Amino acid sequence: MEYQNSSNSSRFDPTSAVASSTVLGLCCALGVPGNIAALVMLSQHLKDDSFTPKLMLSLAVSDLLSLIFLPVWIYALLNGWVFGQGLCKLFSYVVYWSLYSSVLAVTLLSVQRYLQVLYPQRWAKLGQKGQKGLIFGIWTLSGALGSYAPYYRNVKLKAGLLRCYQDYAKKQEKIVILLVETLVLFVVPLCSLLCFYLRLHQRISQSVSFRSHKLTKLVIRIMVAFFIFGTPSMINNLVLMAMSWESDGSNNVTGALFFINSCVNPFLYAFSARTLRCRRKQHSDQPQENLNES
Image 1: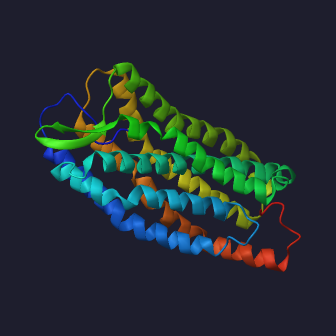
Image 2 (image 1 turned 90 degrees about the vertical axis):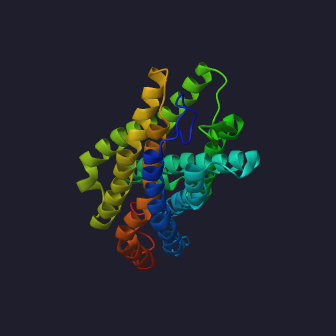
Image 3 (image 1 turned 90 degrees about the horizontal axis):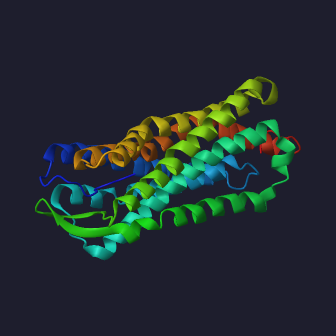
C-alpha cells in the first residue's frame, strides 16, 4: 500500500488531500475509541481456552496502532511533513507493521476456524503455548515484512511542501515492493479466504453448533469488510506496476480507504459480544465440551 508517495506530478491536489483527510479523520474518530472498547471487551475473555478472542485482541491492537497516528498524517497531507526525517521513518514503520499484522491476523482467523471446525482434535493439540506462538509469530513476521518502510521513506520537497514518501532509487525496487504488498496484503489472504471458507461452508451445518456458527459468520464479516476496502489500494498497486506514472491523488484516496478496515473491525466485534459471553458461560458450566469451541 502506497501512502503519500512520490509522483511525477508537480502540483498539489487539494481535492484529493481534503477527501483523503476526511476519510482518515472519520476512521480515527470512530476507530480509535472503537478499538479501545474492543480491547476492553475482549480482554475479559483472555482466561478462556478459546483462541478466537485472543486473536481478535491482537487484531484490535494492530488496528489501534494503525489509527492512532492518523492525525499526524492528516496534518502532513494538508500542510506538508514538518516532523523530521526520523519520525517519518518511525511512523511509517509502525503503520506498515500494524497493517501487515492486521492482515496476517485476519488470514489466521480463516485458518483457525477451518482447523477448529473440521479437525478439532488436531487444533486442540496445539495447546496454549502453540497459540501464543502463533500470535507472537504474526507480530514478528509482520515486523520483518514492514522493515522496508523506514529504509525507503524520506522527506523531500514536492510541489512546495515537504513530503514523507517512498523514495525508490530504481523502478525495479518499486515494482518488487508493490508486488510483495499485493501478494501479502491481498492475494494470499484472498486465496486463504476462498480455500478455507468454501471448504468450511460445505460442512459447517454438520460440524458446529449454532453459537459456533454465529462466531464463524463474524469472522466472515471481518474478512469481507477487509477485502471490500482493501481492493482499491491493491488495484492501484497493480496500475503503478504496469504504468510509468502515478498520481498522488489516487495513492492518497486508495490508501485512506485501506484504513477503513481498522475502523470497522471493532463494530463487527459488537456482534460477537453476546456470543462470547454465551461461550464463556458454557465453558464454565461444561468444561469438558471444548473441542469445537476452543
